[in-house]
Image (cartoon, rainbow, N blue to C red; front, side, top):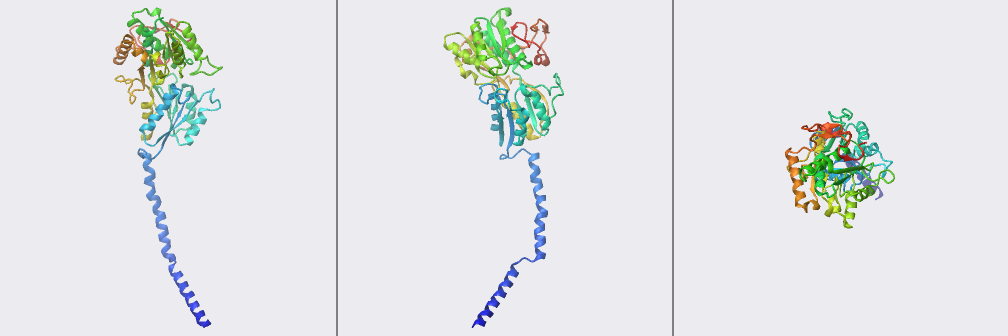
Length: 432
């Protein structure tokens, strides 16, 4: 019995061995089967890898871009306007994602540098970077040279301008874009001239450079025009004072305190204050004084919603609308059509508050709309600017020291406006 069992066991073992052998793939047949897919895979994958470089990214593919802000994203001023420009890209390009770096300035983040911020954004996949303050101009050029495959947009700079004083300074992957705010500032000046009872207007300025001089000058020219042409007053009787605090917003111990400057304006008899800084002290302090029964009005700056801080005394806001320009830059990078250029984009005069078309705008404030005479004059002035019948920078215009700058019968050229070396005759304040 034992032998039969042993024989049966041997027989079963032999059969199992044969079955196992039969189940193994034959070596000659295995080699071609393994080699063919390996040879075919790269040929099948190459076209798929090339398509995104030639075509717009698929809806679920990210387009990463960076925005470097000089202040916080919610300052209700300049930085918030830029941040909302980034949001406009995200709303209009599927898969777009913004990396925002806030408050790059000596007070809030003294250790931060443009180069370090840009390095980090590029490491996160940014293909386009918006550098939003003229304070960043030189360092942005350096960062752009370090990252030649990334597109850079420098707002307020002029290094890519062929007519500019610094033509040729920009690396080929950097472009300059800015909104033509001069006309909007002039509208603010016109509103101030219509509202003042004392004939005394104050301008709260940031630091002194070409940009800030030309904007303050434009506000004065708008005020002078409306003071003379709509109110019938002598321009010599209009007092327009500029006080520069030293930076775009208050830095305790470094700048003048804008709250104190506005207070001093009002105490001196100034009854309309225009802001040229990034933050809201002009309207905030004016609103507080008006609440105490004083007659004072304000014109904030930069952000479309700035009147909300004190609507009853707000004459209006000249503001930036960065969305259209931001979107154009981003789409050009995606399409592979982005090129270096200088753009100083004027308002869309058919509707300066069309947020899909106009890079700058002016919103009437409740205080302006409450007075039919003031409102009619400002609207007539806007219509004249839009039709070309009124030129903000029409001569005669003299510099503060009395030097003729734009002769009678002529209009300033773009370089003359951009690079105004002084504030103008008729204004009070420092030019340098």
